[in-house]
Amino acid sequence: MSGIIINGILGHMGREVEKAALQKNSLLAGVDFMASSQSSASVPVFKSFDEIPQTILKEAHCIVDFSNHLCTKALVDFAVEKNLALVIATTGQTEEELKMITDASSKVPVFFAANYSLGVAVLIKLAKNVASVMKDADIEIVETHHNRKLDAPSGTAKAIAQAVQEVRPNSKIVCGRSGMCKRNPEDIGISSVRYGNIVGIHEVHVGTENECITLRHEAFSRSVFADGAVAAAEFIEGKGAGMYGMESMITL
Image 1: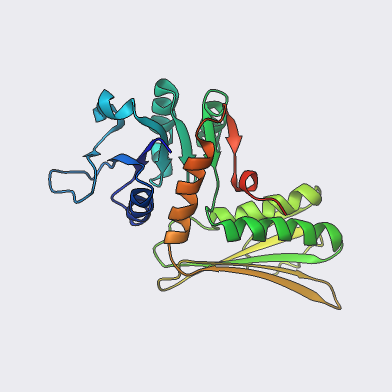
Image 2: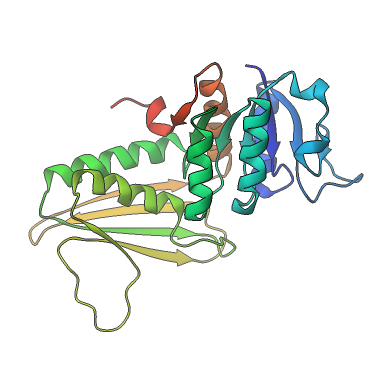
């Protein structure tokens, strides 16, 4: 695999991706606005994309992004300008930022997923299959994360709900409930829980009056997402422009 650059390398997930990429001998550099001469990393870390020297860029094929959605414009502009593939693991993008990512995918390969766990990819596939078979069942999604997570609901919970909508086109995503609000049959409910240091738990409850199927995935370590992101970077190398996701790497 050719080299990768990590955007957000000094963050919690950036550090995990750094370790995973080093095992593949594929890490070239990092970008982080918190970078300083005292930054501890195994590769050079730059404060902005413009600081990355050409000697590094000519060996790179991909930027792995675990930063903040506010970096979206700078990220996609640079990737398109330098013809670099993107693996975007940051969530919480606005509609405008999502359009920037989509537009970039017409020029360079973009691997975009809310969750880089292969197990979560299987969960999403199974949830979609169960929803298509149990056509009249109620569907509720519960996601649980650590108390520092900024966005709610999680990008993964949204991805599950959107996958279900593909087989239930008349459904409506409802995030949280309060007060007098009877559940409508077409609702896909999402509830968010935040406490402690939970890495990530996603549950999908599909139930009728007589039976229920519960699908559950729990991540025990953030390294599972780092491993998936590096696998995505490996997968996308040599691919043509377009949008890719975890479903591209699994078959059920």
